Length: 478
Image (cartoon, rainbow, N blue to C red; front, side):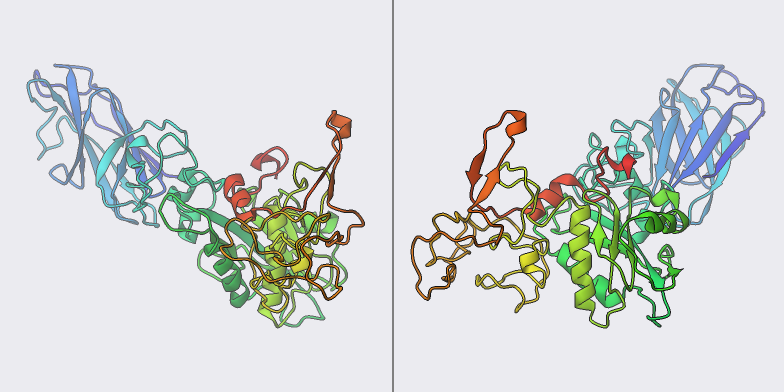
């Protein structure tokens, strides 16, 4: 952040508004914007407005702002460019504080803009009112969902996180906050999910366990295709993974390791994280360590995850593990949520929960309603469209895909494997040694109940929760 202060002591003209000697213009680079402020005129007729000009005193006029402002953000500036910023005053009789071709009565300073663009098309000075405290002045938050730069962000001036991805509009539009998210591709009107992936380099894996471009590409396609709406009108989530591929992506790096077992996010993991993840990324980036030998694990609602067996020549296998463990970070478990129908017990292997989070679909989700995803290999989370299954009264003639949004009756499934498709059978189809799910909140005064097996809308959960670390106490706890 660069701050420049200038003072001028030219004698003021008679009668017109003039500046007290020592009056200053301050300029600060804020991403692609420049914030300027100045002291009020103190002599002559009262100023009714101030004029902002760029370049020389006869240069481009940026804006005429009311005299009550004295603080605004200039948008539409070119990157890596030096500017002279000139402020003059005008009174009600249209008298100026000084002639523009000269220096008398003007207050000026110089500034060099930041190297990254994104300032937008509008050359203007926007009043420095920030109603939602997201780092963007209200004037650039045009609230139409269409981002064209920091001078026209399309964001809501009364919502600090317009796209509800857990990252403030200012961080995504300005590239401020310690990490230039804008340069990495983040935008304030489209949900972004940020991951830093480090990897262990071991004697048993000559290439190291670094994720490949093919892994990241497959994973990004899943998120981009998700049924998630955004203010910009484009569906899906943008996955941004830093695995040290160059340019602005220099966070991902190798961790020298002897190849011994790494037991998930534990003490050794935490030491590596403290050493390799810069503090500015905490709570914004999910942090993955790709290991050769260990346990694939992730924090539920947190930001840490490990992927074992990463030294794998099949990108699809690594992408599948990453999608599953990232799902845990996004507060999903093997049954979608801890409670099914309000229940308190975690569940797994639900045939109608069509998600990569479900161990029944660990190889891929079910795309043809036969209750088997291993033959398709499609990676996805569930959209919650499958109907509940009552294990005490299963209709084998309609199988699984008979949900309200399926649009078709599913293939028949012989749940009890007796060779007959019956309209009512009782079978423990998820092998948890009980019929249906026991909802037991008795210790809270809620009576025990039996509920069917439910699908879960993972994508709706992800969209509503946000995509940065959610943590038990919010992002600050991550």
